[in-house]
Image 1 (cartoon, helix red, strand yellow):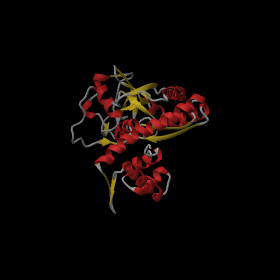
Image 2 (cartoon, helix red, strand yellow; image 1 turned 90 degrees about the vertical axis):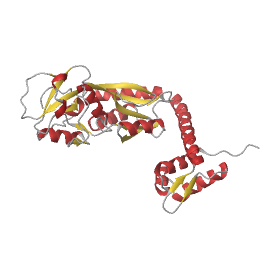
Image 3 (tube, one colour; image 1 turned 45 degrees about the vertical axis):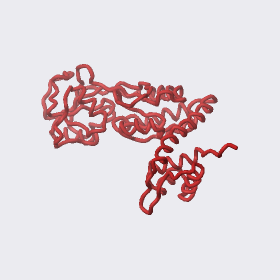
Length: 308
């Protein structure tokens, strides 16, 4: 007689517990009661004949076999999701849930238009969006926590496919008090020592450094920002200059400041915004359709020229 197999639901409970490290938070993430989740994991342990997680009053510690089961469970859950996606996609594309991450230096400027465009083009699509830094977005992509991500390339994201939706130029933002000639500024004229940057984890930091061919500020640099808005305020106060994405300038990130923006002349002064997904994903065709919709939604935005 074939031994009973664990269900994907039970495996999902276990993965949620591993990710959240707490029965209550894991249950909330799975939209079930804590007793239901606990009972499901207990039944999973009974079926497998092994202790997967050791419980105490204050913590949950996974055993070695528990970690192995979690790793394999993630693959099984992804395969189950792909199976459902294939069946749905054969009837009609982009129906149901798609989980997408968008990086913070893109999301504020294009996400409202993306949601509106996707809603019009694919009324049966339920697009769930999270704003996440590039590294965590790529990690979530490969463990199946999200389906696709809107990133700025180049970025180290492993084995992925990409659909380019926009080319976003980088503009030099300088204080109004700094006199500057009209027209684009050559890359080699940008003073890297006065370049203000985002903190580690933001791909725009890497793009700015690559464009300027700089090694960045010293480890004890006194001014490192976590948002583009902070960078603008620092530039406005005369603490240096920075590179900003054109889509942010076009969306009004300089409004209320005295900061000027100038085009940059030279190779590499841009980033490619793309929708990416795991290579070999069964919904690749649907993601390309979604990428086309995103490209169309972004395209009408006016390009920001020199000035404020």
